[in-house]
Length: 426
Image 1: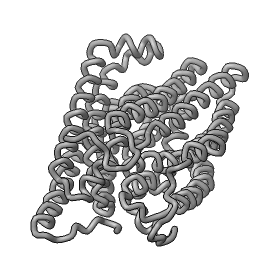
Image 2: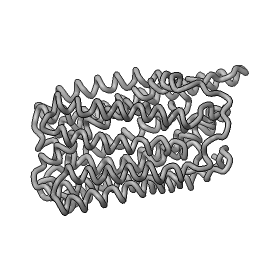
Image 3: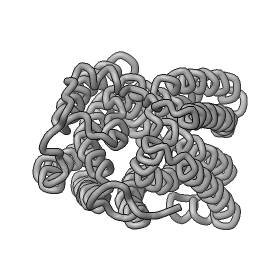
Image 4: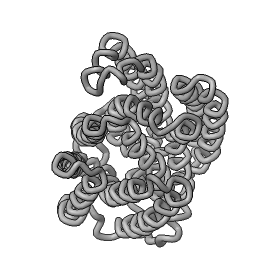
């Protein structure tokens, strides 16, 4: 497969992957170190559980209100909309999330209300940076993404740790992190975005039509994120915040690998979209298969590393209480490999601009994981939660493969017959 980009002034695919990897590794590493800081400072895993509950509430909510506009922007190969439309809609979505998160916290988790509200605020401001990242991704200039993500992640973590060390207060530490995120999105992102916004757009359908276009994909991502966090709600209800803290801390190690896998996904989605839009189906298929092979390799490396070093790593990074759960980490590594495969297949479907079909798929996934959590967590505890994720993700990977294969076959038949390919949403 040729490595040269079809986008003018874009970096080569390997360069974009390296920059994307640097940016997402900075984010993943800093998020994980933040978990470590909370665990190290507060001896009780219940505090970790409260923070994890804040993430479990705010991340699915923001996934819904964000509408996955980054993917819609990055796969808009024809630049049919001005960047300002994406930014305005993202601002509205973040405002909605900032209103809904405290409401959910007040109704269901009053003890964690302030933590939930502040976690949501930090993530909402980060979501504003995310829409700029979609612009960098669309133009395949991910060195700007790396500069943004690295700056915000490192400075945000530094502010969090310093304030936590000085005052020993999780609330103040989250406030410091929020200030850093605000400074990055207001001062740094506009500078990085210079020269990437199209000067003239032939079509300007408006924010309302963008909402209609993006809503299915936003619902897809919401259901996917909710699926990942659903076991945490069951753990909190069936067990307690202590168990939730243990599960969240161990799962955070797997999340680091997920961020690395996402780096490659962010780098290749625009390339997949260009291949598909131009009818280069052989290159499209070859790239997807390469991604699936990488997903399988990443999952295998994680499982092997857990087998060799998992107990030692959990004991050193956390403490002996967490080291007893090395088998939980191993099962979550199996889930991670399947999750990478599903994510890359979903990226292929997104590059085809087929958003609506993914809503049904994700709804089925959510139902499956919900039923499995209900059946497995009470009798089997945290291991039941992990196996619920593994089984549901294996089902999802198979389903996404069949969907991607069907849409690609349909496009190939249409192209061979001399018909124009109708891209979803265009």
